[in-house]
Length: 256
Ligand SMILES: Nc1ncnc2c1ncn2[C@@H]1O[C@H](COP(=O)(O)OP(=O)(O)O)[C@@H](O)[C@H]1O
Ligand SMILES: [Mg+2]
Image (cartoon, rainbow, N blue to C red; front, top):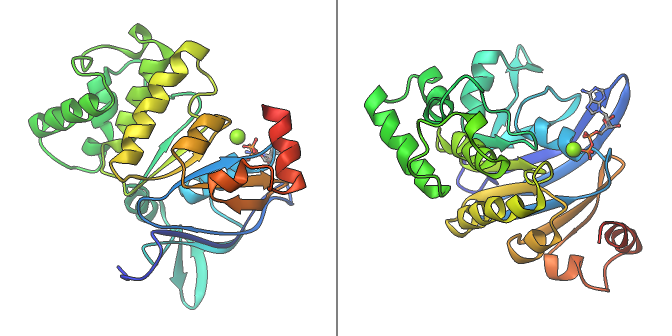
């Protein structure tokens, strides 16, 4: 680890679908403890960028570094090639990701959902992992839920289990892609509260969200995406103030 390197650094990252760039030459870095909110219109590349940072899809240009180390790609005979699944798995362990549609395994209990990654990574004994699951469930306000199945839970509870699952391997950064967008309005708050408490505990987070309250009150940085590019990157108090750019104002008028 390089002591001075950013926790996560994307440099000139480009991602194309069918030959067309949907993430265009984006450079972005974040440091430990920073909470970044990403806003922007639908189709502007927010999810694609997040998936690239989570190493879920190979990129078409640029590079991603974690604690200074190149991730997602390796240097082979002087050339950059995509990393193998095995190399990706070890890099991904440091990055937790939470999706809009919780994606829990329906046939597994809450505890099995949370401990699966620990098993796959051969971490801990069954009883150690049970304790890990219990302590993470406490963090997300779901103590005592370990034997329940996803179908027995509300959407808000399922999303909190998904957050617990993403925390299982002890990630250094958590990425959230519209974590409350699929929830009934009355369930949004319980999920945002868990995210806020994670932020208070110093977790580094990147959150794609339309929740202006969260972006204003919890994030330390607000970014606007438009057509595959970062067009605004400001402290929230400036991002949401009348002095922001025309583009941001237009977007905010649209979502508010
Ligand atoms: N797997 C994919 N295959 C082809 N096109 C995709 C894929 N994922 C996203 N896109 C396209 O990339 C663009 C950006 O999508 P996305 O990153 O989901 O935007 P956002 O999250 O901001 O709504 C959109 O035009 C979308 O249709
Ligand atoms: Mg999206």
